[in-house]
Amino acid sequence: MQVTDLYVSAPGKAILHGEHAVVHGKVALAVSLNLRTYLRLKADTFGKVCINLPNIDTFLSWDLSQLKQLVTYGKVDEVQCLDAELVRRLREFIGVSNGSLDTCSMANLSFLYLYLFCICFLSELPSLTLTVWSELPTGAGLGSSAAYSVCLAAALLCASGAIPPPLKEWEHTARWCQEELELINSWAFQGEMIIHGNPSGVDNAVGTWGGMLRFLAGKIIPLSRVPLLRILLTNTKVPRSTKVLVAGVKDKINKFPSIMVPVLDSVDAISCTCEKVLSEMTCEPITGEHYNILEELIDINQHHLNVMGVGHPALDRLCQVTLAKGLHSKLTGAGGGGCGITLLRPGSTVQELKDCGFDCWETSIGGPGVQQHSAISVKEEILEILNYY
Ligand SMILES: Nc1ncnc2c1ncn2[C@@H]1O[C@H](COP(=O)(O)OP(=O)(O)O)[C@@H](O)[C@H]1O
Ligand SMILES: C[C@@](O)(CCOP(=O)(O)O)CC(=O)O
Ligand SMILES: [Mg+2]
Image (cartoon, rainbow, N blue to C red; front, side, top):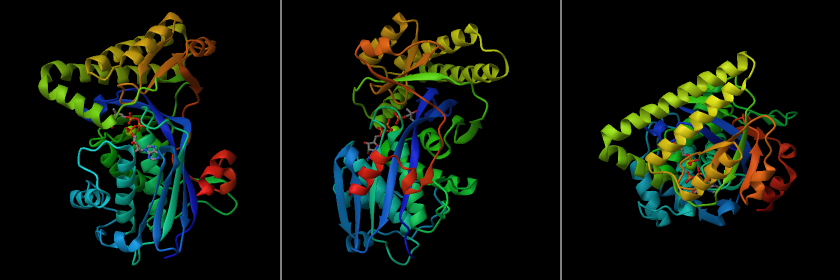
């Protein structure tokens, strides 16, 4: 089968409420960002598979003859849990231990896993080059791992013929149908499992469908009527690992179930209350009281996240500095550093926070989920990077 060249992209996300609790079956509210990860897949004839990941300084290639020995003949549309045996063989192949948190190893492992699985029902492994470039900071709570996994899943499922490339000749961008998105999402979840260990699936759902979502135990409900919220993102630039933080919360819950379960229940109630307020804001005039409630929910949740052990002094500082300007912040994503979100009221300005030395920017939320692009619809500076390799 002839593999077609293609460009795809998927958005990062911000979790408004419910991070960590969502891993334990509670509600999360999450929204896509206008920052995206882009992937270019190019068919080659060199008998190699090459992956270029300039964000993390990783450029690797493997001979098809080496990879053929690792192939598992599974069924592409039946993806429930990881194939532990394939993961073990791949770890051995790239020389990475089970507990490794190394950025490059995790990215390679998830790529090779999806490549081998997607391609396994083709008669020949295709020779291809994949280049990924992201506008998202890596490992900062904005779902870069999920955007990466969603792009890989979409491109490799297309390359394997499991889904068609949706773009028509005259179109600039195009999306897949619901059934195909579900397949992309389930494959992206596999990639997340390799990178995270125990993901809830909320991040890959936002990367796949975009917009604002309510996520509960794998059930995804798009929220179509949401008010235009202004959200400020601040990167504390403190590095952290989602895998480690998620495992830490699990340990705490196991150690103190009677203390931690009510905290998770409270976060669940925060997400539900927030969803109710957001829905009210779309059908009645928006008042200061709506903002007061949203701000109180942010404060309470931030305290809960500290109780879960995923805070950081840099995030405390963000909360204090923004509060001094009358604004309310919480961490977003796994915490332990990474990014925080601040709810901006109409009329509030960002400059004062920038003056405090924060790396912050106002983001527009609710962008489209995974999509295929024509070359012309990819921003010039990104196209240049993708086509460089
Ligand atoms: N642009 C990228 N290129 C390669 N790998 C990436 C990229 N973005 C994310 N990743 C993978 O995702 C991991 C970060 O995931 P994670 O710790 O969950 O943080 P995040 O909050 O950004 O999702 C990295 O270690 C890397 O393996
Ligand atoms: C902490 C968690 O709720 C979100 C993690 O997001 P991120 O990888 O930090 O962007 C984990 C999950 O939902 O899988
Ligand atoms: Mg992640």
